[in-house]
Structures are given as C-alpha cells and as structure tokens.
Length: 143
Image 1: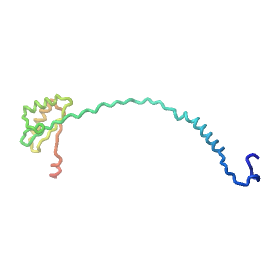
Image 2: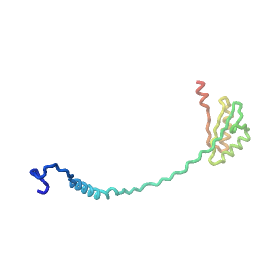
Image 3: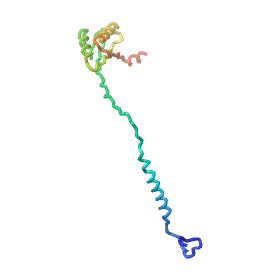
Image 4: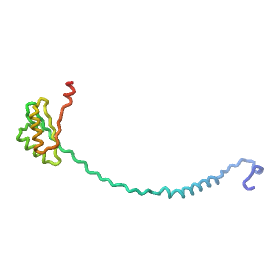
C-alpha cells in the first residue's frame, strides 16, 4: 500500500510531514469560485440622475434705522431729519436694488399720528419692506 495503513509495521515513529493536498484542493475550489463570481461584482446599474443647479444666495439688503423720539423728532441712522428731507431720502432708498428694509423704532410715548405719517411717507415713496423694532428688555423688567 502506497499511503500506509493500520498494519504498517515498518514505520514506528509518528508521521511528521504536513499533508498539503487538502489545502491545495480548497484553494483551487476558492479560486474557481472567485473567477466565476468576479464579473458579477462589476455589473453596474444604469441610472438617469437629475442634474441640479443652485441659484446664488441673494444678498441681504441693507437696513435703514428710522427712530422717532417722544417729542416726534425723526432720526435717520441717529442723525436728526426733518419731514422734507425724509421724503427725499425715502424716495432715494426705494430706488435701490435690492430695496433696503426700513426698521422703525419709536418711543412708547410717541404719538401715533407721527408714526402713521412716517409709515405713509414710506409707502407713498415706494418702500415695501418695513419692520417695527421693540426693546424686549423693558417689557420683561416691568412685569
């Protein structure tokens, strides 16, 4: 018998050689499996993806601070302004592109008549963006 057997009395020492035949068989089987399955990994799915374009972010318009104290005096960016100059400045601001935002600050004891006149002047000169600015600190402290 070429491979040895149970009744092999010629060899009394234990066998010290490593049998690599099963390992080679397993490696060849794995190689064949990888050769067969490798083309499947390169298969691609065709997609028709949409193309997106983003518009540039619009620049923020400048703000104009218009303040009215309790005496009815009008301040344009902390500079005293009379009614005639107010109309001219509002008309010039309305022509800018993008149109600036008018922030109206009024003292709480200011007569509503003055505030209404300033709002009407802004609207008649073409300003469309107007906001009222309040001071939340005073409202919280007085409660």
